Amino acid sequence: MDNRKLKGIEPNDDWVIIKTIDMHTGGEAVRVVLGGYPLLKEATVLDHRNYFKKNLDHLRQSLMLEPRGHADMYGVVVVPSKRADFGVVFMHNEGYSTMCGHATIAMTRLAIDSGWIAKVEPQTKVLIEAPCGILTAYAEVVDQQVISVQFENVPSFVVALDQVLEIPGLGSVRYDLAYGGAFYAFVNAIDLGLKCDPSHYQKLIQAGMAIKQGIVTSGVAFAHPYEDDLSFLYGTIFIASSEHAQVNSRNVCIFANGQLDRSPTGSGVSARLAIHHARKEWTENHWMTIESILGSQFKCQIKESVTFSKHQAIIPIVQGQAFYTGRHEFWLDAKDPLVTGFELR
View 1 (cartoon, rainbow, N blue to C red):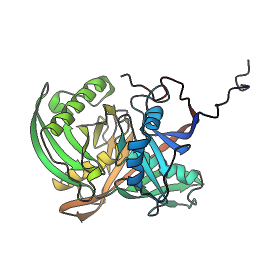
View 2: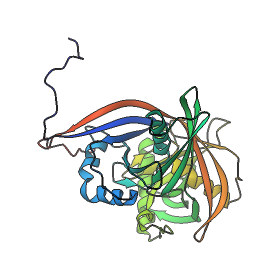
View 3: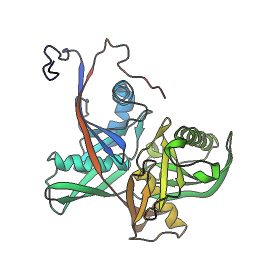
View 4: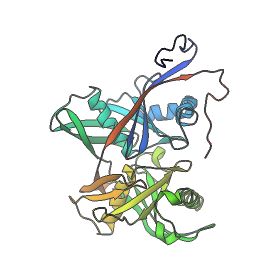
């Protein structure tokens, strides 16, 4: 049987049809919505984010969760922007992110390859409006091919260093708090007897969620200087050493509802740089290489120091590579009892 010849299999007129391009950056999935998602007119990126949360969350669940996605799926809805080349709303298994570095890298390649942005060698500039602010990305282009992408993140800063909190089941946990487009708690994995490798996958998720919940319930305040919508703890990042001499360290980020980032986490390494800068451990214009649980790598550096409201902040630069995995047309049948998806872990 020729599987390419499928007759009579078409969506009904009353089904919702959503078209996507799927990619990954460092192993972390990016499902980019390009059609079928209702958008607002004359609305900001934050307006779209709030509208999606209140009115279209069933679409997020359908695309992120099983059977179309999985517990660790990640997505982007492309929206209009008056401040940049386009805007993005990030989404995951629990809701909507404020910043995402791996998705920014993927979106930059997609925008250039698709012709939204004119391709210029050796470098093409792309402006992206995210919920946390404007991201300036630069793609390295050789022989009309996007080789890699780096982006300048929003101002990143430290909230607190060397905090200690009793976490049920874990004991006294020492952590740092920093912002890189989202707020993270940073913990040395070795302090908890954990390894940042696949063998400790479930233990990292459990510990990461316990730490996040413990910090939130302890009453620690997370205040973004300008946007209340950004003022929450997004995840826990475990730090460990690398077995490779050319790699500075390893990151494993546990975010949302127990998602484990397969990449080094772009917003996470940005916040890491802010911590290293505050401790006077890293200076401007020097590359740091951070790897993920899979060994995939992001390079990052401090471009400059800035003042951001009351914070002494930095502008981080993060570099990585994105790849395509497929093009999809998803059908949402309202009669399907599982149309909004489900989550098993």
